[in-house]
Image (tube, rainbow, N blue to C red):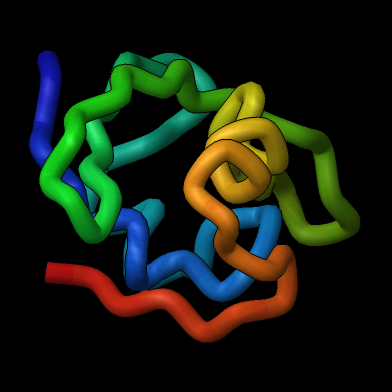
Length: 81
């Protein structure tokens, strides 16, 4: 299942609960997500899960590399559409 997601929603790693819920992420449902930058160039990213105190939190593999490649500061506020 691939979904096109605007990366300008994600606040930092890990993904917010709203984004994780929208993507229907769970430990049994990790999948590729297609994101685009400001130039609408598409990149496919794999989702990942990390154990946290309250269960699991989710993020993207190679997210820091995507941010760096697109000259986005790691602590930038990003928007979801």
